[in-house]
Image (cartoon, rainbow, N blue to C red; front, side, top):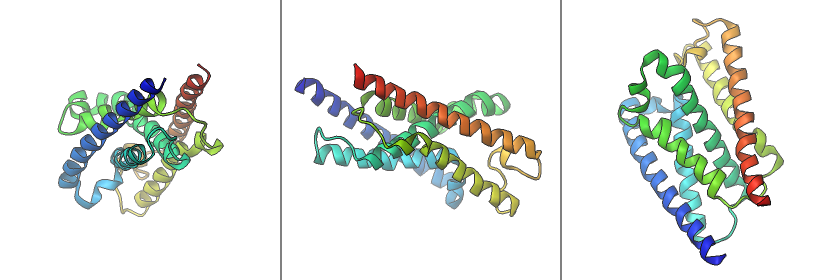
Length: 207
């Protein structure tokens, strides 16, 4: 059992180190391309948060080998896993059909932001982290984070400070029903994905 646990911890450290490296590469690229405006993007915010969370997890695992992660870090990791999964689905099912699959999944650091980041985040959270219970509010944390971003971006669009960056945030171009519908879709996705990933952890506890 101890050998298996040590292997799990080593795997977690390696995967989070890969995540930190990949996210740092993506962030350097995004800073060069978008400058100070990079944080207007939900995708970039989610990936940067994952980089920070991965650094905290690596630090904890080295200092407290085998100990469970603090609840706050696990909740933040859940937020990352859910938000990054949403970036993957939105890019795959909504944006790529409009502007091309290659642009959203093959160009520059798109493979990191839209596929590798989400994949590694979900694998490390749902399948490799010790499956301790999370606080009850964790189920709603990704939705709260996503809607907070959305409402801030919406207000900035209304004030003509931002243009988008996503079509459903352009309140002067889209019908109010479209804006409301996309906020509802994202909220439902957040709850559904949170339930799925927490359910996987719960099943691991019982096995």
